[in-house]
Image (cartoon, rainbow, N blue to C red; front, top):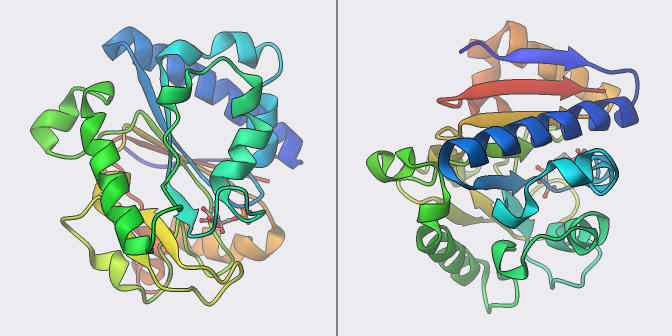
Length: 245
Ligand code: 6PG
């Protein structure tokens, strides 16, 4: 399935379109297998989407009782730290909607090491495998209904950074990664490409003109981009959409 790309004049317009897409996929997923599993992305771009989902008509449209929230990656900082991705989502979205607490699954950054957090998060995915698309069983990997991703100005996505050994991980679903060359300079916990590329839908939310050259290389010169930019390796079994503002 070829990727699609949509350009928006503002982050607000992109966030409204993304909120509509989340609602559509949530409804379809619940109709298809009784639940909706989504991996949230971090950074700053998705905040406007998360806030939009707390507002009408989106708030009433998402089947929160059947929704399971995970994260595509997390900075290994305490939950109440300003750079914790889950903290941002709790503040912008989760505490404003009626999703059951037991269906929100932040990475356990309270553990002693990023490696321990990665192991525990992999167990969390395994424990909740029945919430995922039924094809997860035959594929032997959690098949998310939707994975939200961003892209950094070095072409990283989730916490898969250029040159990281995590880029070539083929067995593990979650790994710990070293401190990257970009802020925030914290060790990370991230989903790996086997999970990202098993997804039924991947939606990139990209903001910032400085990322456009990388984006265009990925879209129009993929072979070249694969050598430099981890985001180029996102080629899901399902649909890939780029929303760009
Ligand atoms: C993180 C994110 C990361 C983010 C990009 C883009 O933990 O930092 O998951 O992959 O999506 O860095 O961030 P912005 O969209 O805020 O530029």
